[in-house]
Length: 186
Image (cartoon, rainbow, N blue to C red; front, side):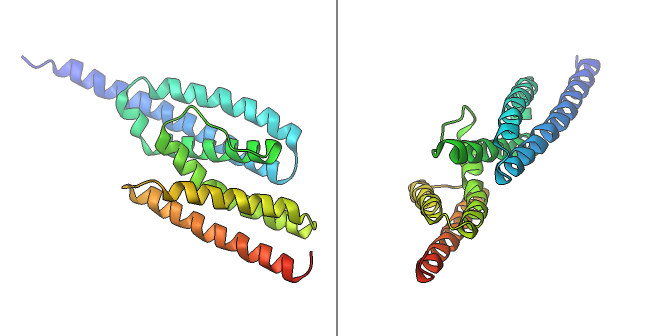
């Protein structure tokens, strides 16, 4: 005999866990945006505090996601983790000049990595305005390397392919910026 009461309880539990996941995803998403904004404004000490906070909140989010295998495939979780990746990668690149590995699902990492050049373009434009041509060149070279590495993959996911295409356009913007700086003799 089918235990409908048990089935209802399982559905309620999933819905409850899903709501927790969505709410916690919003927390991670907001902190990611704040971290990126702080780095853009060169508020590194504030960004470092936000980094600690976002790491703690991401761990909480992962704990919720592990309650049910389906939760790790919820859109809110995926978006929050890829934004987390973008924010942490951006912070680390600006602070240390390098990319780091993150202990997250490879697809989420790639999605966050593919969003990173957009932030790096913004940073390069800011730096160009300050006359820091070498820093702009370093960013262009890093985006070029990212794009070259991403081209080696055979992505079957349309979302990932679109984001990789966006990296190509970000690289083109940086190349144009560098050319413009060279033509102006900077």
